[in-house]
Length: 184
Image (cartoon, rainbow, N blue to C red; front, side, top):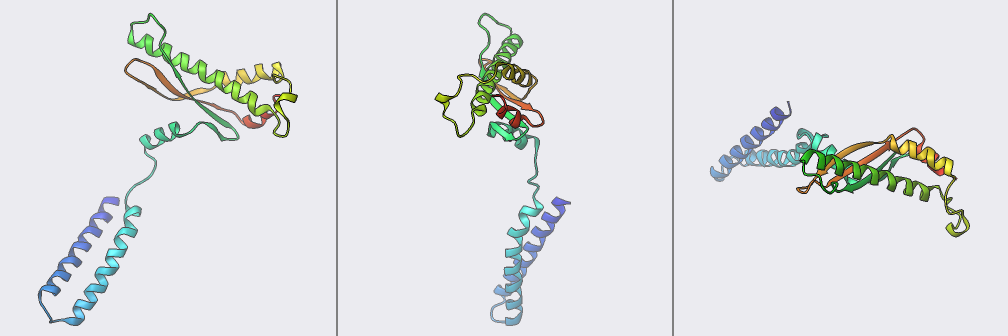
């Protein structure tokens, strides 16, 4: 249907253009016809660009959703936190599959560690000075957060030619942001 409406608009535009060209080529005859065709062509030329975005599908394709995952990290909403991380393969591995798996595992561990560090930072009350606070949030709460972070998942991964891995790691839990703020 989208293609048929685009084809219809293109055909209509061509017909109006041809008619306008014929009127211009006939010279001074048919002044009223020229005026009507000129107004019609003007309307059509304004309608074409307006309807083009509507007729073209610009919805969410798989590729555009993939690129959105890589676009940002941090708090996505109150229940979701994303972290980008990279990992390198373990030295001594020669098998491609093993190199990729070890690099991915290293990236996951790094993402989890970075998340815990960020969560410690978010747990500090906004109005307090860090120097006046205890150096670490409550250890029991940190262990609880580590369990939540380990329950996350890899949303996207990509490898380079040396089998280094880059991932986007996501933790999603109802009320995650509030739980992080309550780590003290």
